Image (cartoon, rainbow, N blue to C red; front, side, top):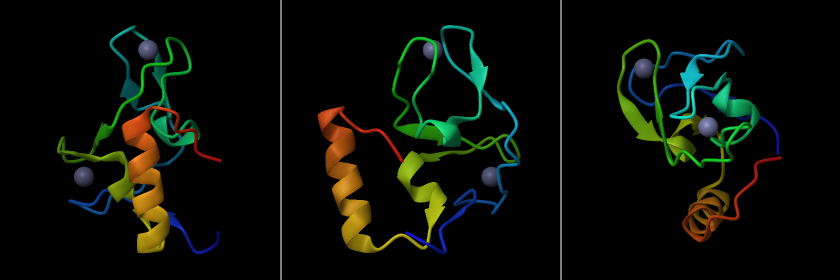
Length: 86
Ligand SMILES: [Zn+2]
Ligand SMILES: [Zn+2]
């Protein structure tokens, strides 16, 4: 998959690779490294909050340039809780 860009669906802020996300277990990490899964407790975050505008959006909506068909597959996988992004 190429030409995929990650940005906030609300304000278009682009993740800079920093650990901006805090899990309820206290772990801070870059959620886009793991497809929304806390590396510490394996909690899966279906929605992702933007550090810039504080709005929550579905994790999948942050990925721009994905085919609708692929997005749909990922959404279905998310619902089955077996989703690992590669
Ligand atoms: Zn934002
Ligand atoms: Zn966690």
